[in-house]
Length: 150
Image 1 (cartoon, rainbow, N blue to C red):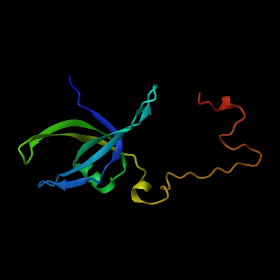
Image 2 (image 1 turned 120 degrees about the vertical axis):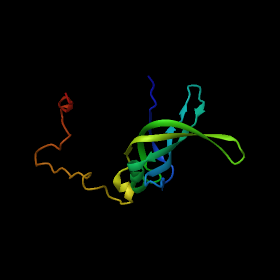
Image 3 (image 1 turned 180 degrees about the vertical axis):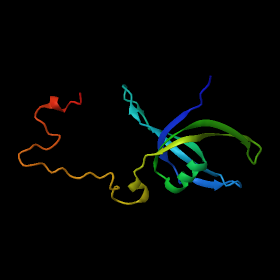
Image 4 (image 1 turned 90 degrees about the vertical axis):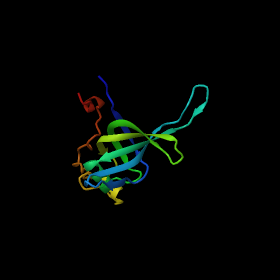
């Protein structure tokens, strides 16, 4: 048995490049950045943040969705397979490219940020709570044990 599964959560490096094959099938390519935070070792040595860039390939419906809704800087969750291909460059050198063929994608950037609108969509907004006179505000309780979910 073998498994080829990649899960990435990162930010889009540039707007997707979408092309259509002669058969009408859409193919999108874009880069995705994933970063590991920097940290300090016990001896005081600083380890800087490390960013990896991944080449994503999306086909058909995912490519069309990417074309319409994904932009540089958006946060994406993707699942897919790692594939490596090779080609000969103009000088005759063999080059290798590693790509992630995306099977599943979740757009994590809020819709308001995607469209450039300042306010979140109405379904995200919550109405302010108006307490009755003499009743405590929801979430404020003198007995912390009553706030436990079990």
